[in-house]
Length: 304
Image (tube, rainbow, N blue to C red; front, side, top):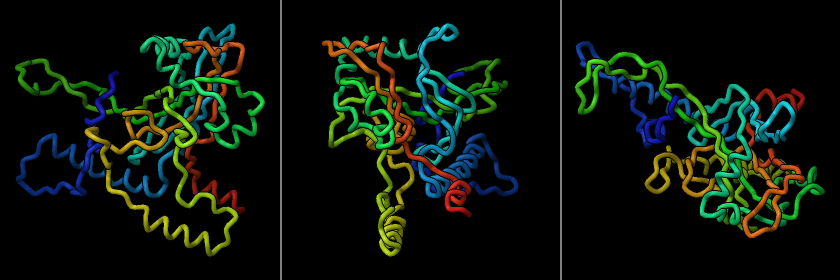
């Protein structure tokens, strides 16, 4: 099962809100049906994005699993869950997923002679973590660590191949085409480069955050101003790339629609090329992500 290219999803483009219209006797082809799907998917994604925002809807907790007698590989484990990406698409991980940490570290160490790991090594780590994480793990934070962020992004894959007419400059009698496109996901663990006090690399907080202690009038005014300034055009591209522009939580030229899940702190020894301090625990900050609580959960918290 292969993942389709980013630009193959119509929602990555600036689509006009145009519904296909049909009439008796009109000739239709596959593109007409694809356009109808794209219209309905685009309207739903647009509504979800403005109603809930982008972030974690349920699950997707990230944890570190060390090697044991029954687990030969050290892993970063992601629990099943559901997120909304920055285009409003649902990204569902239906079962537990794991990333093999030793293999990932070896791949990073092989890039540019370990320069990627050197640039992702930091001290004074509490500045790059959420307040809840720092309160719980301040005594465990190492002197130095490589900082990497875990993302989940929407990925589409073709399944269910069926016979079809050949397309393109081919003349085949056994051509096939995908009869289904599966909404899937992809996990990415990326080292974070060039973090500092002015660029923490964490998801931006909502514009109305920090009003918990304000009076009702100030909160009302701030929320009204936020709503009036909240509209954004569909899928603002980033440079020559399709899709949405990257946010402060994204690394380099990665897919700007990816959802930030967690920050991973990998303790290292202060060598020229970072070497993992295997005796120190790998720490994971799950709490700097954007949480999207449901209305039912908010009602319960308010005693309704």
